[in-house]
Amino acid sequence: MTILKRVLGMSLVLIGISAACVAAQQPATPATNTVSEANQNSAREVRYRKNIDDLTPDELAAYEHAVARLKVKSEENIYDRTGFIWQAWVHDCSSIDVFDGRAAPLGAAGLNNLLTSPLYVGDGSSPPRLNSCEIRNFLQVPGGTATHKEYPGRCEHQKNTFLQWHRAQLYYYEKALQAADPEGQYGPSTKDVALPYWNFTQPPSGQRYPQAFENPDSPLFDSARTTEPHPKPAASPELLASFIYNLDWPAFGGDEYGTNGGGAIETRMHNGLHFGYINGHMIDNTTAAMDPIFFVFHNFIDYILEKWIQTHDQEQITGTGRDNYMRAEQDDHLLKPVGFDEGSGDPKRDDSGDYTRNMGQAKIYFDTQQQGYAFAGTDEFLPPAKIRTLIDRHQPAGFVFGDNPMSLYSALLGNASLSPGAPFKIKLSGTYEIPDKTIDEQSARATLSFSRKSVNPNYSFHADVYLYPEDIKGEIDREDFRNRYLVTNRAHWGLSHHSDYTLNFKEHLTGIINSLVDKKQGEKRNITVAISGKSESMNIDQFTPPSIQIEVTQ
Ligand SMILES: [Cu+2]
Image 1 (cartoon, rainbow, N blue to C red):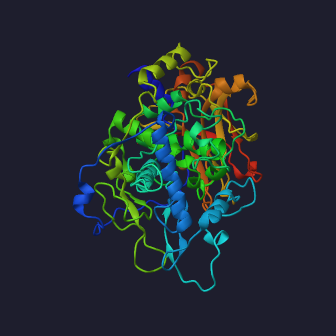
Image 2: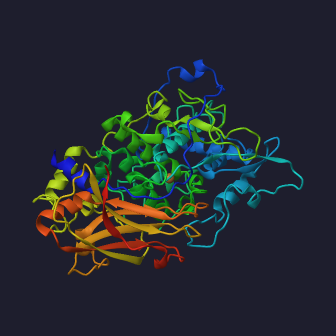
Image 3: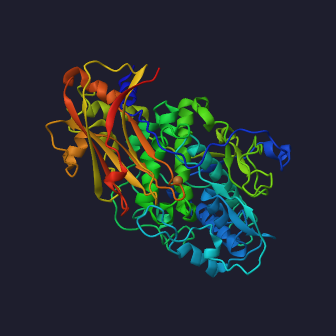
């Protein structure tokens, strides 16, 4: 076994338990397609998604024009499924009252009011405010207007369909951009627009975001977004590469409902960027996609998924993350993905006997070229050899955790900041005795666990895990302490409307424990979980202390 595999296997197969944003959908009987087979399955012209900073001025102008047109469509009719607001609702507006006749002009002032209003903030850091899909909050509803229910969409988070659901969402969003003004009636033609991506592991071209998103005159601008100075987010190229080259789909992309609460990309990068680094509309799942940066942010996550698939093969994507139908209500005029079948999905809640619409099964999206897009990046990801070099430099005498001034996790993080800028509020403490023989990774694992009970509002927080000798004080305010003893971290995104479960976090530490057995057996170790966040309602009584248990896996 190579050093890379050994060390990654020891320290980075980190799985925890949490709850799911929505229950998994079951595969179901295919229904009649609404577009012709010929149209669906004809060869697609491949468009290349580029780094936002590499767009030519013409490409940027066409992309901006497409976003501006989506906004106009929503101004003309808020129920236009190809419009800006509906596409934002697809992320998390699970039910909405739509006027019969499906026409409701919002107007430029109405849209502006909606986009600049203080919206629902779901992490408890301020009182609850508007929810973007509660349209009565921003649209005058004439008395007696007949309405019916529709179901724009529901995010898939904290499980193994997270990456695939967002891939499907972006597929349709890109189709909506291309359909925004294909003939160039109102500006540059949008028919060849490919959604750009933002590599958030690199220093930003602007103050905090890509330059294109910091121009206040651009339709890409969002005044709700945080602009104040902030350390680099907890997303380094090294940490990202270590996740990508780890062939363990559940650790990378998430596991079944309630199993690990989301994979590494979701819990160690995505979540903290949403509620910590970007903030504004991105702080909450019901408003996140109202910030245009949502789509370039998730597009890089889609590129990360693509890199994993190219490295390991799509056959390695296991579990319900293959066959699940990706729930959302998209416009039938947008070209459906190759291989689309409607299935049935979840029953509607209006007792009509119908089913909520969806974007097809996850697995039809695994081949992006077949769906008409690919990524044009050249060196967005570090090669495996670079990671190996870093590991060799930081762990010269093998991976004896704690004997080096930098733990592997700290070394992989590099200059990236772990904390979201919020203060450490809670320290959870436990102890552990190093066993006298190595844990057989084939049949058992060392699992650190702690939990947080159900709270309302369901707030967001970061949890950093430290493991250190008994005679050392847990000085989490000291950088040298954090660098030496950091084992792992994760961020929990407090999704609004999902507060009725206990979060059970589990982190696999088998490799780290085994690295200590040889020289430190029988010694005691302290465990500290440092919790940080902005919520006023965060309280130590909501958490259980951490402990490390040996779990038999076979
Ligand atoms: Cu997201």
